[in-house]
Each structure stands twice: as structure tokens, then as C-alpha cells.
Length: 67
Image 1 (cartoon, one colour):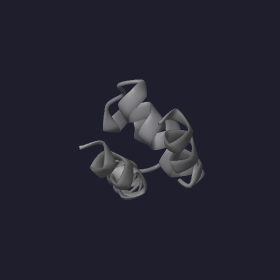
Image 2 (cartoon, helix red, strand yellow):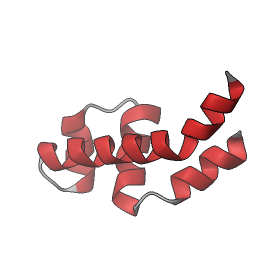
Image 3 (cartoon, helix red, strand yellow):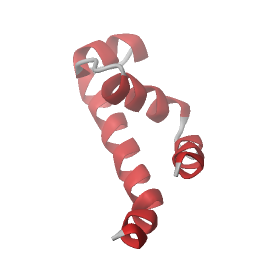
Image 4 (cartoon, one colour):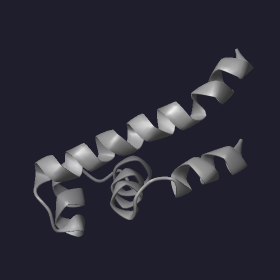
């Protein structure tokens, strides 16, 4: 599973990966993520959203197989 998650994370753009890690692993608020990424909060939120969508699509077959 870790190998699949790592591969899926590597498919994200650098901005998406950074935004996702800061939000979901580091627990930063969107405003904090936007400061780190030097962008507007809406853009940071969208980067997190895109990352979550891409990870869900990439990992969905594994989740379905485990059910």
C-alpha cells in the first residue's frame, strides 16, 4: 500500500504535493498553506482539492479491491 501511495504522490505537481502535505500531514490551515506557497488562499485551497481528487482516482482501485 505504501508503494502505491508513494507512486500516487509522485504523480502530483510540486505545488499540489506541497499543498496536500502541508494541509493533511502538517495540519496547516489554508491561510498558512497559501503563505508557504506564496499564493492566494483560493489557489491554495484549489491545489489541495486537485491533489485529493488525483489521489482518490489513483488509489480507488486499491480501496475497491480491499472491500
